[in-house]
Length: 248
Image (cartoon, rainbow, N blue to C red; front, top):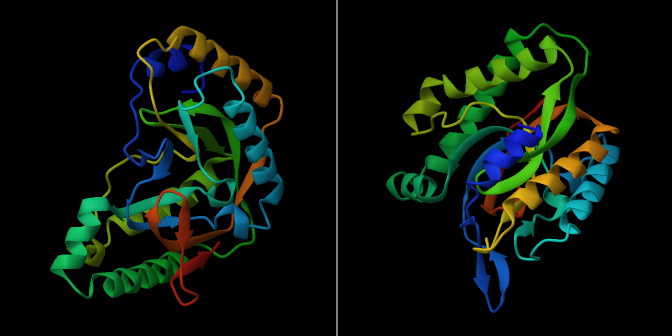
């Protein structure tokens, strides 16, 4: 996904994201409520501060490319995070809350149990879970950077957690299911206005060149904590102090 031919292919299929919509001439985050299991957002994340400083600089370089200024709608750098498991969002979330007044409390209780089960199943150790930025990726409605594990152990620990989440009977009973395979990535921005005369070949070349510069510096990312977070749109992720979290 980080190769030039992948950019050329993906850019043929990019679409405007409904998560940001025009209001009075500027794009604003549209309502998109739900829950995810994520690493702490950048503004609260001391252990990965160097990584996020780099990522913010990368985002600025991306935004300074000579393209239509409304093509990429940037996310606030304070909100940068890695999603370890999508849970529920948008209409499915609204429907679940309408059908079951206890839904959110039950979701939190399930996550407490899952985290406890995970901790009991994993051999105790202090080895850090290290991933590394591999490069820029183009998705159908967004652009970001993807991460790869440092070794098989770092991969397996995250995959085992995801299995415990998506195979949990109580969570399944709440209507939560796995929609995507795990592609570790941090979103930098969403696509806004895609002009009919967008020079897609030139855009893919610019992204390839930008990615080549970044490859010289592939910062490491430490996965040391995952938290249940709620969002109302794609710009801010929050939680209460007593909500479930897991320290690796």
